[in-house]
Length: 218
Image 1: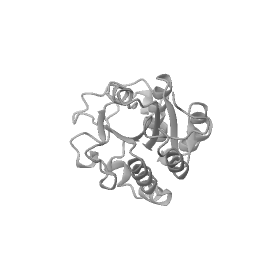
Image 2: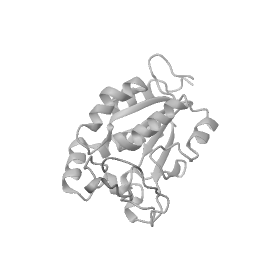
Image 3: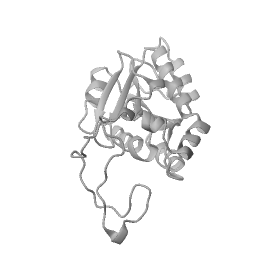
Image 4: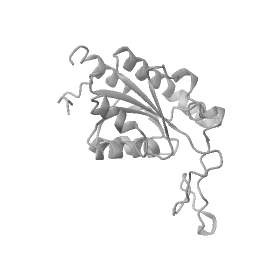
C-alpha cells in the first residue's frame, strides 16, 4: 500500500467513489430533507470532490442502486424496526421495498454530478458497493489501494462500503461534509465514533488539498 504517513492522495493509487448520488437522494421531494441538504451544501461538496478528482486525473467511480422494479431482488430481513427505528406494528416485520427502482427517472445520477465517458458506473443491489459488483476488480486492475468515499447515506451504504473496504485492506478516506444521513444523530456518530478507527475522516477541502499535495509525485 502506498498510503503515506501524511495521507496524501495521488491519482496513481487513489480513487473517488461516489455512492448513490441519485437525483432522488440529492434532490429529495421532502421539503425538510431538501432544506437540510441545501443548508449543508452537500451537492457543492460532492461537485468539488468530483471536479478536483478529475483535475488530478484520479479515477472516479459511481456506485448506484439498481433494484428491480418489482422488488424481486430484495429479501425480507428479521429486524426490530424500520429504517427510521419505528417498531413494527404487532412486532411483524414488513419486507423492505427500495424507494427508488432502476427504471425510475429519479434513479439517474443527479444532473449536476453527471458521469464523464471515462468514469466508471457500477450498479449494485445491496448496501455495500463491493457486494457482487466489479468495484474491487476495477480498483485492483488500476493499482488503486485507497478510496475516497462520499455520498448517501452515511449510516447505510457509506458505512457498509467502508467496512467492506477495510476487510479488503483498502485505505479509506471519508469526506465528512460530502456525506449525510437524514436519521438524527447517525451521521455524526459514524464520523466521530466509528470511521476514525478504520479510515481518515476529512473535510472536502482537506481531501482536495491531499489530492493536490501529490501532483506529479507518482
